[in-house]
Length: 228
Image (cartoon, rainbow, N blue to C red; front, side, top):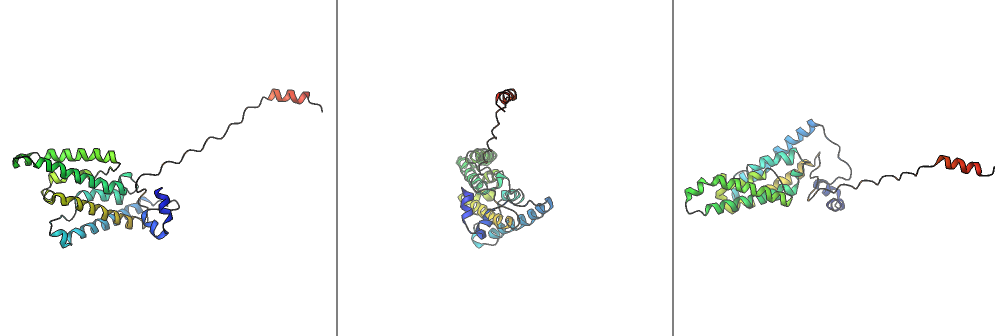
């Protein structure tokens, strides 16, 4: 259904959303490596430029990039056909994981003893990632780099200080990386393969009917009895 909707859009729009009316010619492994280098460099540079050179973010001590997005770049620029690299997994995998990481770590921070909380951060990190994995599996948004997004609130003091502001930062990072992937990957490749879910496999063609066997002896007998 999603593909049919993209087909209705003008070609100059649908092309950058991953729609192709015909099969895409595969690139050689050297061309794939070259374009993976170019697109990942450009995509990560754009994301870092937004957070490093915007006064709005620097005043709030937002890091130049969330570390887990380096791993996301491997998927959305280097393994663009993987189901783990598609937009639904990229955006929602990171967001759900960030939400879980902040919630779990805040629950641990309610301990009356700060020293006790600091000594159990490792447990909060493990629990956050474990829950995030289950949530991503149940929602069909599995994105391996998001596992690090879930544990960062417990392991990184810089991320912990962002508190709930971590969520919009993660969401913006995912959206900007997705926009870069759409622009750069579709220059010579195709991304995404699907937006929400992969297309169902085409049903196999029914087997051709097998003709009934002919009784040769019966045919010969009929021919002998028939008048010449």
